[in-house]
Image (cartoon, rainbow, N blue to C red; front, top):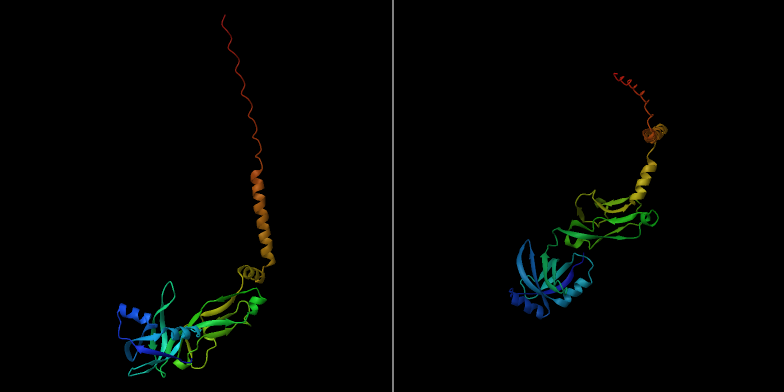
Length: 246
């Protein structure tokens, strides 16, 4: 990664009123810190900072910082954090993390895709971007601005894992190497149909299923059949009426 030049001036006023005056003068309040140095408050020209951000696509910006009038005028730093106004989007404050040329640093790098996957174009698949940023470790000069993956030859059902990402020499990808980054997913309906077609079914199993269906269909018919009427019992004979006494 190439360092971008930027000028800065030490800032002594740290109160709210002081930061307002810094912004009113066309500068942005800043701070620089690192492992081998104490935090130092700075101010940088707003236009130069905005121009730097406008022409850099990466989230990681390596800055060759020149601090005017300081005992250590030249600093190599990563632009660590940018605070913006929630409504206007104006830059309110920036943080710089000082690094050494000979010491490796750990940062997150964006993953971008190029090309149209054949699994999407002709296979009916869907490209799923699982990880948009990955953690890498490298010397400041070796840090990539982004990792570009060509997905043109990716077939439906194929996946690019973390350990398969193309990175330049000197860059180490951190994390589980088997983690999926980009995959061409097969639509659910097609996957189910393919699984059903691939599963062998024995002829005997088909006959058993057919017999069970026929038995199940016959049972309700038997239940609906009306029961036979029971035989009527013979009516009891009437006793003869008693004769009247004369």
